[in-house]
Length: 498
Ligand SMILES: NC(=O)C1=CN([C@@H]2O[C@H](COP(=O)(O)OP(=O)(O)OC[C@H]3O[C@@H](n4cnc5c(N)ncnc54)[C@H](OP(=O)(O)O)[C@@H]3O)[C@@H](O)[C@H]2O)[C@@H](O)CC1
Ligand SMILES: Nc1ncnc2c1ncn2[C@@H]1O[C@H](COP(=O)(O)OP(=O)(O)O)[C@@H](O)[C@H]1O
Ligand SMILES: [K+]
Image 1 (cartoon, helix red, strand yellow):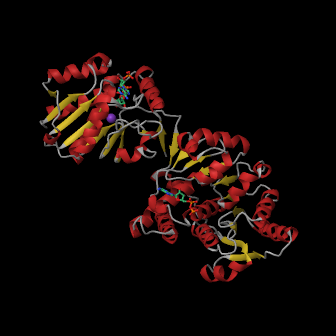
Image 2 (cartoon, rainbow, N blue to C red):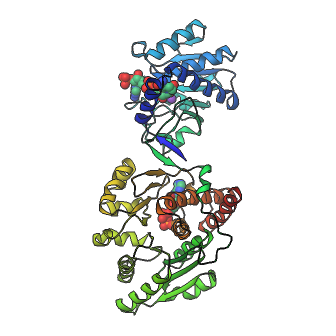
């Protein structure tokens, strides 16, 4: 697991390393510059490099990089875009050292001369939009087509939100120090950053921040009991599908089984019986008919729920009166069973505040931004700008585990921790993709994972499955069925690693 930090959090970590740990700022800076230098040597054409510097410590990193290149015999020019008057203490020292070593300093940059540009204009200290000469410079760099290495973060990207502050430099590669910044993990900052390398410069101890799973977290996957039987691995009830909507029931239930659940049962409209039996013979079925009374319906749901260890409700359910009765019965008779609430069930929940009050930490809600905006009674743009704030506010009404799906999905666990998922791709914006996620969450819960782990792990795994699908079929053409195939392949790989 890695921790993603904002600019403010990173500055606190810099300061505590300098003040409490006693590591001088210039030592950290030299390590940062050496990490950039290594990356330049490995990945960039170094016939002639231009290092563009601001007046702060990001600029000071850049000056140190220019010195290292120069001393190693690589042709380099240093261009100061900032003002001498606002130099930090470190920048004064770096600038003087560069002059002492006779690093070439230019006052104009003729971009056609260079094969690589190092962007050391602004780092985590960016405090406002780029304007005037900085904006013009960023635009010229972007128009030059020359490969760019960004130092710490592309200049112009907000380190906490990933937003473009007026204009931003588009990098080929970003070497970021100590911790990956949240701003290059979210869109559009992550696109501006290009390929990202996180480099150890001697700053440790982040305790605040957003968590993000990585390959080491494969170990979270519950071990299989060699003596287990199909009951051991979880009985999952999917209340999904409605008339003319069998696909969502298929994708969610198949994903639950592929994720390792022992048994799945689909509770759906009678009209889906034949198609589901043909498509997915491994699933058991319970069906209801539109003509049934609420009591008859409730009886069928309660019987199926008695059987289940975990219930997922919502994919393709519609927002009919029948669907509302189904959701109400689930929440009323759930006892303490984990429940995944997805898709149309979320739209129903948005209308029924009384039912929201019945959701606790064992309920996992999986809204996309549209569904979340209805639940939290805010706009989609509110959610994009302040995702954590609105997820916190919603938790006060509905103390559930929350998966807020987007190109970068946020997870808020019941203890108030936040996760941001970094796997997945735009090919996953395809019908049925969310249904697969719902099934994965339910399947993992069925194998005994607690909601605080199952939610981030399922999202991460789903993204990896999507990435596998994109490499097999291409992001443009991949579909939910390919994500299911990716899921099988990823789990097989994870089991072989564990
Ligand atoms: N020892 C350490 O601390 C380490 C730090 N490290 C490095 O330091 C970086 C952080 O350095 P930093 O805090 O000095 O801020 P930085 O990003 O250079 O920007 C501040 C300058 O920009 C200016 N400015 C801001 N916005 C502007 C705008 N829109 N338009 C114009 N000007 C603008 C701002 O001016 P002001 O707001 O004061 O007027 C100020 O002059 C970090 O990303 C990493 O690279 C690493 O070496 C590891 C060790
Ligand atoms: N650009 C993207 N990058 C990564 N993941 C994406 C992207 N677009 C969509 N996804 C993921 O695909 C899934 C789509 O779910 P949802 O919107 O509920 O679709 P559906 O209802 O069609 O199944 C979510 O898990 C979301 O995070
Ligand atoms: K930068």
